[in-house]
Amino acid sequence: MNTEWHEEIARRAALHAVLSDPGRLAVVELLALGDRSPSELSAELQMASNLVAHHVGVLVDHGLVSRRRSEGDRRRTYLHLTPDAAIVPSGWTMPRPRRVLFVCTANSARSHLAAALWRRSSRISVASAGTHPAAAVAPGALAAAARHQLPLRDAKPRLLSDVRRDGDLVVTVCDNAHEEMGDVADLHWSVPDPVPAASDAAFDAAFEEIARRVDDLAPRIAHA
Image 1 (cartoon, rainbow, N blue to C red):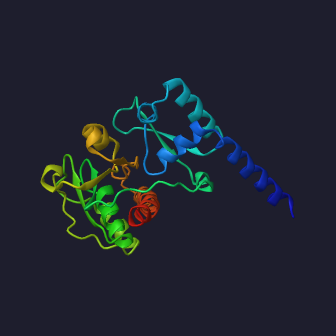
Image 2: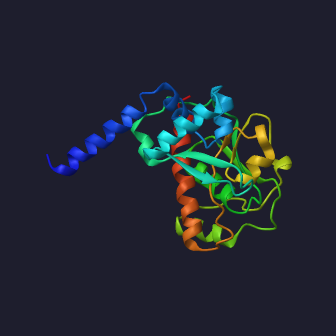
């Protein structure tokens, strides 16, 4: 075997050693479905904040977890898994909801793309909404959907209170919406807003991140 193969084996062994700690494995399990702030992790795990900070620091140092500053409350940081965390298959599943509802602030880009991607991956009904809807869907979102041959159905921003139903699995794809809604949201995906940049690259990056997360979540619900 060549040197690169041995180095990769050593790297993966080190990651498994990091995850042998129950506390760190619990952090990874919670982040498997959605992003969380350190304080949210501490509350859900009933773990002291300094211990959460220690575990997160180790996971960040080993490339399993990444930090992203909130686009809403700049004092807040969201933690999310990196592709390297896929070495540990998660056992998480979600109860099958009546519908999945993707929410962002303006309902003009990320939530529409998420709903369209969900339709492509799951038979469970889906909708999207905004806490403060814009007048129209962002042209960049329409262009990104066209580039990826993804149809956008009923592409019109709608108000959350007009769309939300009992039994929805609410997934926020916007930091501002998540922080405004609080416990109303079931899951949070901290996806950077592509609208301010208004570039193909920004919209494609948002599309790809949402697609990866949808592809991970959909089978967890389907098999639940």
